[in-house]
Image (tube, rainbow, N blue to C red; front, side, top):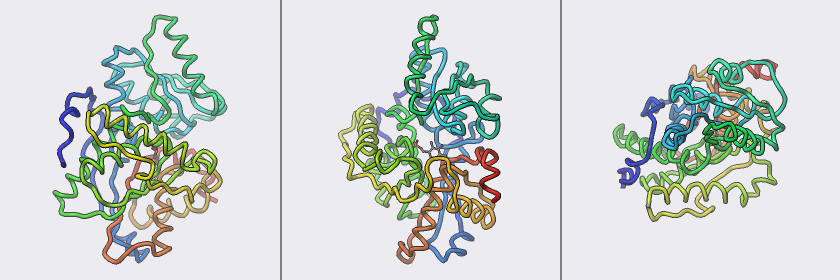
Length: 335
Ligand SMILES: *Cc1c(COP(=O)(O)O)cnc(C)c1O
């Protein structure tokens, strides 16, 4: 089946992304590495206040908020959250107030944080472990004030948000067919898991049979030990199937996740990220961001160095869009 399930068309959706995003060749990078043929799916070009993967999720989340008559949205993330930036832009388009709960203490307005402010979002700071409780408190306070808040979880990773990546896989499969291309392996950055949930369920239903490898950006080995994180990703994916009324159900074994590239933790730029950013910039003129895409692409390149590919394979990096954070990491990137 390469048609989206019929129920898909009945779901509220607000057009925010420029779709389909292009698939580009990375011929010079492939040549420089002596690697497989390399492609990139440009979800950094979704076009919402630059772009990124959250835009596809927000098409469904913001439409859901509007259908529930919300007048403001609340979400959370790190100080350089791409999700928060795109949510602030989507809220502006939809005419909703936007409140962001950022983990940590106040920081100078650079990178995504500057954009959040320019986009008119109200920023609240809370210790990282208290972000969710802070969102609930804010929502309760607004309701008491006769406002109608809509809370979007960190990363927009519930089943409504994951619909965006479910649909993205159908878009991708149609593009490959049209362009006469075959892709053997996809790599991308996973964090809150909604992208992964949508892509893997979408692959099952759209008939994509290549391997889909998610590079974990921030699950500590404790959190990940596969059970907790993947159980949640699986729950989100099966929630998408339920929303669409399709029979498919996934198990944790359907998700290929690599936790081997965590470096010194979330948002810490190391050698892998720094070298990857420079290499793709200098071979392809392509920017990847410091927190997510440099780590995930660096992981893909490391797999190439380890010769983990067969002759005539094609690998694709799904760019999820975070180059707006580069300036905030100027110091770590220029050592
Ligand atoms: C949020 C984000 C991810 C991870 O997506 P999830 O759906 O949260 O797993 C990857 N890359 C970038 C650039 C992001 O902002």
